[in-house]
Amino acid sequence: MPLTLGTVGHFGLAVKDPKRSARWWISRLGMTEVFTFDGGVAVGNDAVTIALFKGTPRPHAFAHMSFHMSGMRALRSALAHLKRQKVDIEDPGDEIGPEAEGSRNMGLWFRDPDGYRWELSVIAKRPKRRRRRLAKP
Image (cartoon, rainbow, N blue to C red; front, side, top):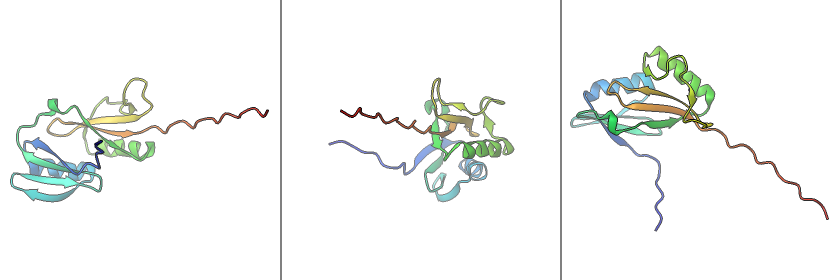
């Protein structure tokens, strides 16, 4: 039987200080506190919940996670906001670029205080197909 994954409910990240990390996510990325639990804090929005639990961060084991933005205007606005918040953004001076060589998707990358890498991206619209006209007999 095929399996179809649904929307991400939540995921957990080991962080040095869950309360400090929660404040960062709330102030920098507009999350809200969803709930607390023994040794941690969950933050989230309508799209995702992140359970921040006390542990040893392992950013090298987590390449990155991407959050989709509604368009380039939203991505540029997010970049300006992250800069004002002094977030550790990659590629200073050339922050927004293709997700990979030859990709039409655009993104920007940054790190949180525990060193995890995050991406904000805009998925390129597919080009409209040109309709072929069939020759009339």
